Image (cartoon, helix red, strand yellow):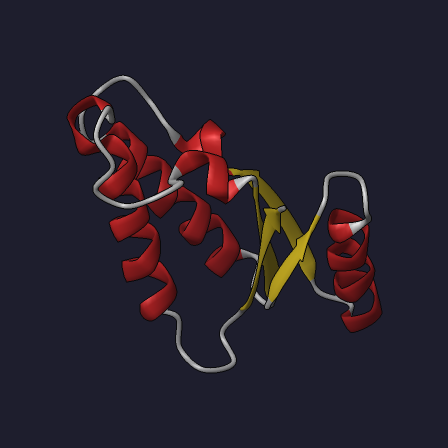
Length: 110
């Protein structure tokens, strides 16, 4: 599910309300918090988020401010391609989620 809108319009509130209504766990992860200065650590942070989500399944994982983490893949100026690696790891983890294993909500601002 993609929630798209300006800051402060209630995207996080909607995601929390959905998790409450469905009576499932809720994890909110800010995209920039996944980044780490050490090579490989950012990808490990992504894996840890998904491991925690699987451990508390069923779970909604709300990926907040993800567009700030990776505005455009392959963009110049990224230190060593860290953002591209994190996005690739995120895609691999989401792709690996079995049907019915979890619900993911990604938030994006205008």
